[in-house]
Image (tube, rainbow, N blue to C red; front, side, top):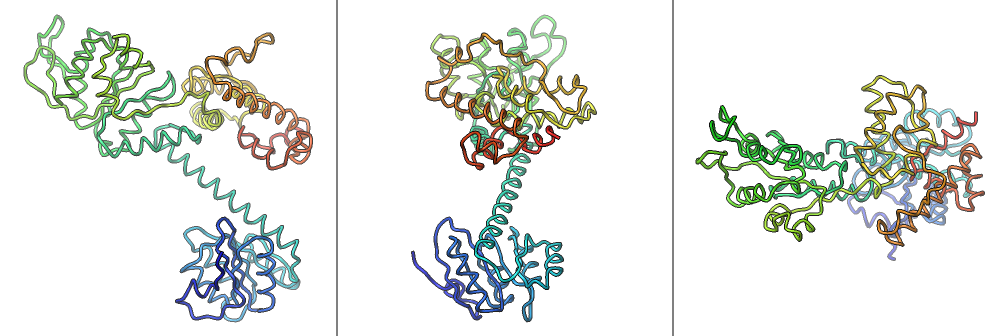
Length: 491
């Protein structure tokens, strides 16, 4: 890798650089060191380099601020407090003005501890007293950077959740759901016909609404038509409308849903349940972009966007002659597949907490959260009804729960002692996937056991499980558990 002075990367600035070496290594954390003491700044920069950081040293606050605002993308700033001209306080203010504020650690002499405390109140992350030992520097700098990265991850997660709310309660941080969000965002920029597929309760109508709400049609009507709930004899009239006297009981002209939607969006929910006769008429609508009311002769222009949804295997229906192949291809221009909840296990607690927040406000209940037993119960359950079942279960639990913590989830049946836990796996999951699920279940079982036993002491849990503390922390995050809960339980 090439080595160059920072002055070469920032040619606009005419300032004195002391012993700066910025090695361009991908993935290394970048730290700016600011101190008017030339010997000190070189020593600190050298210590940071030895610890694996990329260090850029400056002998004046003014030069550091100028570079910071114009060029450098940093992970941390280490600055002295007292310097001639601009001091460390000005460096801190400059760091806080950035689009993404950079954490600042100040170092000072023993006599300036009060000053250091005041600058921390102003926003600094930590302070070090001179002389600085290599070991203390490494530990404190690493801790500040990790804390900043965690805060950034939390902010990103909060932003993702806000984005998820914009998709009308399609909440989820799993990779599968992120892919769905990306596809919805892309679809919203077009007028392409879409086919939303997924099991009952996965949120197919929510996905269709999200496409509509994110599109240029968002201010126009969104009309959902259940092809299952309406009798086949009435569905034609519901879709296309009818003229007065078109059939017995047609006492007045009726506007159909396709016409009523105008420039908006029409969702044909459970399209796989329609008759072949209705399918033929829908095919003509999609081809000709027009239709007539039942009993009418005047063509009506179709201006709405069509989205279809189904929980059926349309390929099998086509092969069995129950669904028109030409209509299938007309509808399936872009396919949105919503994963079942059992395939996005990391979203279970995210959704559960989301619904808990919604329903405790709606029903004015004081409930703080879920106990580990309830969390374990939710993770063990397969949720055949998917998100809708989870939503209903949480609402019922909130209504009936008399305590501050939820320790069991309504409507989840306990697994019988003599039930083979692996009986349902063959045919549903591949061997590799089933083995992965069993390993995750083993991780969760041991984690919950030792977290309860050791009252949330991660180091002890890691020792008993024979893994690193980082692995334990990662498992806690995966299962939505907070170590403080276990500590409180033991008090």
